[in-house]
Image 1 (tube, rainbow, N blue to C red):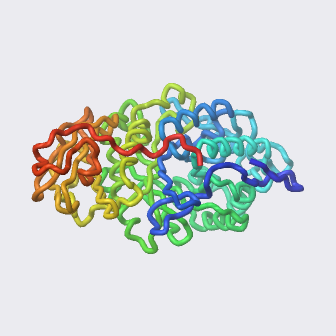
Image 2 (image 1 turned 30 degrees about the horizontal axis):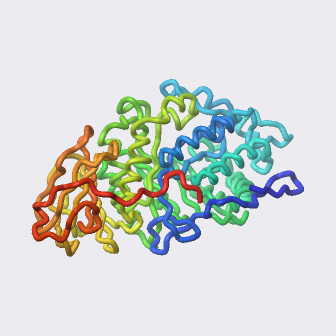
Length: 473
């Protein structure tokens, strides 16, 4: 990327890269697209403190692994967790926060004397430290070259909103907006995670971004159990939900967003954090091999969400142990296997099967359908039976069953005749299953011209290629 330097020494981006951005909202208001209109498959990792915790070499290594796993975005906070030493004294089961400076020892902003601030009250958002932000530039550019977007939070509100004025919020919006207003792979996120939301301050931050002339989409990162739509539906381009309750609670929250007018894309930006055990500090841990971990992601997608944000417990705070934990099974299940399975469908055309056009109602089965291609997808939380109606497809259909934990195909079955109760032919170790259904003639390996498709064997189909992992735009 070429950057223009203003008289004050503050750089402004002039993008010359290959990412087809900035991202925009689809014409139906349900998902994000590249500038060309091609749907953008959003699956994000949440190494919130990556920009402050790792040097550029380690950061590139981290990004390379996540891109290879299938992630298409990283959700990041632009600054350290605290502008004083507070975060360094946190102890979340041995995890501490990044305080004051990044891995190179640079603070993001100076005080009024042009020195690194020693206290939060000394920070001047109109006095950015260019050395800190050059590192951020390099990371954002590297992400773009890998085809990854950045969900970019200027200031983590739960740590800072009570300390800074509305004018401060405007200044950080204006300052960062001017630097990154044309960064093609960036979407802005106000927040986040604030219990008492400072809507007036968020609006000033938003205004600072707009006055800087940003060209990208804007959302907000909410507190757990909330959606950004609860606070700023009109201003935001798309919505973010954070939910770690039971699956039914998450689905209700997502469906509330889905029904809002005007229609805006919404997604599960944060849920469980993968760990070796359930519970833990904040009670946000889930084992990544469990169906309970995967269920939130699959249910959110099939109930109308356009994407999901994955979290690893030891990669969200300071990333001290990222090399040993980056290959956890939950990350691969969501970014690799879930993406590959949905990549065999026209996932962007899927709408929730709320009218039970194909699948009967069941609290542990989550389903979506595409009328454009006559494709249906369902996630079974457990080994249960549900009524499936073959007549919606208008011809003999085929069911392809998968283990969502490892992407392994469990079986292929023809589907025809009257509606009947069906259950997975097998389940994986976690007990959950995914089925995709489409006209049988679209599944290679079946001779769909015979009179009795029920008599056919069930060969492994040649499914369409998955969406291009690691592809640069």
